[in-house]
Length: 77
Image (tube, rainbow, N blue to C red; front, side, top):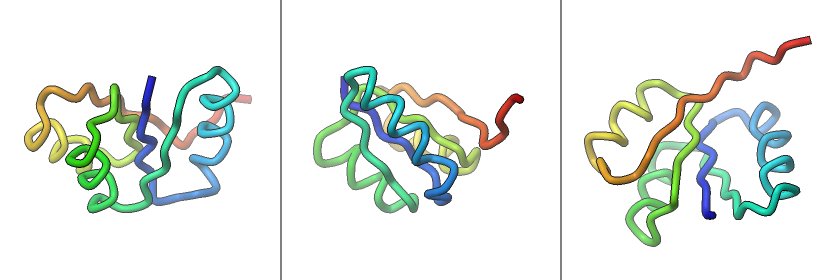
């Protein structure tokens, strides 16, 4: 499964990318909305995990067939 992790903060998305890859997913990082769109237009991913609400909202309009999941930068102790 090919996933795009859309988050401008590398420090918060790096652990998620590492975990996804350990679980066998192909995980691609997108640091800005234009990178998210480029991934979705070139080879659509199976899902986008998005930390920015505005990006997610725009993405579901522009690519309604790609599932989008909102993520949080908050961690539980």
